Length: 358
Image 1 (cartoon, rainbow, N blue to C red):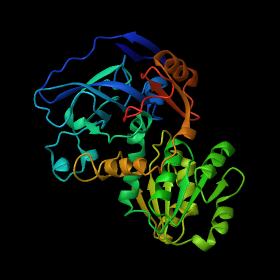
Image 2: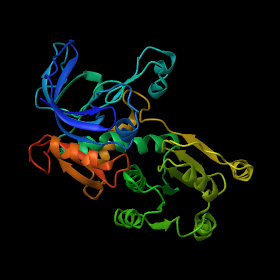
Image 3: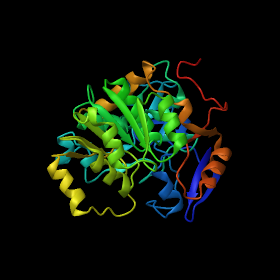
Image 4: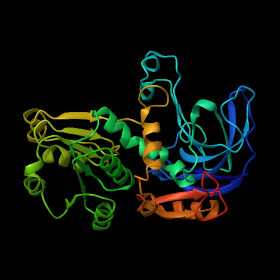
């Protein structure tokens, strides 16, 4: 089978690897159809950030069940599934409280073990989420990243009747914006420094957009003075500057959900730190995408949003191709962020397959 393999130093190759066997009674072998490159994969590829090399990445993927272990009764060959990449121990104190992402013994598919950027993968049944009929393969591959922002909304007690500001209009930010819009936010505002991203945010439903390279935090806050209460600010860019901007923008008792992962140190002035106290801000750290009964309410919620047609993905995809084209597109990044999602397509058709077979 074909596998996209990452080597130390940022070398990306397509190699022939053995098809993985079923090793346990609860194993399921999946024929991967579509897989997305996550922003967190870029340091693993180009900045020595992987746990080991060579490695096959991929934790945002879906496919069809090819074969099942003897204990599997709720899946059949041909069923469509998406990967649930976290592998908690299910026995520790955190897991007993259903705090899956806090498990100190967790493993992670596509990071601490080989992932789905290959034609076949074998996984335990509990790491697969069955997709409803009618969902496209691309939607299945986007299920995991959609749940990331839904987890933050869950931690914040929802977004209904709140003013939601999304700081960072990349893929996660644009997904978060669409989710908030669909789940009853009073208004949704996108903030970025990239005019093209802001234009896309507006096309996808942002009520207002602001370019923070052209206007100050004071300018934005003044423009939103009528919406200064009941704010939920989602930081998705993962930079020290945008974290500080969120604090400066926030109105009284606003919630700030931190989604983006920082790769540089954050240093706050005493004046900026004082804003957290004076405005009585609620700062929410958000890690992964699992709440409640495994794998979490976010996964059912994401499925429903796709079924209702609430999430537009086509505008978020920059490249979709077979293994060789995917490897070339990833290599071309040279360690820089993606400008649109890069998708690996094993369907044999550029547009991908549909779960319903249409």
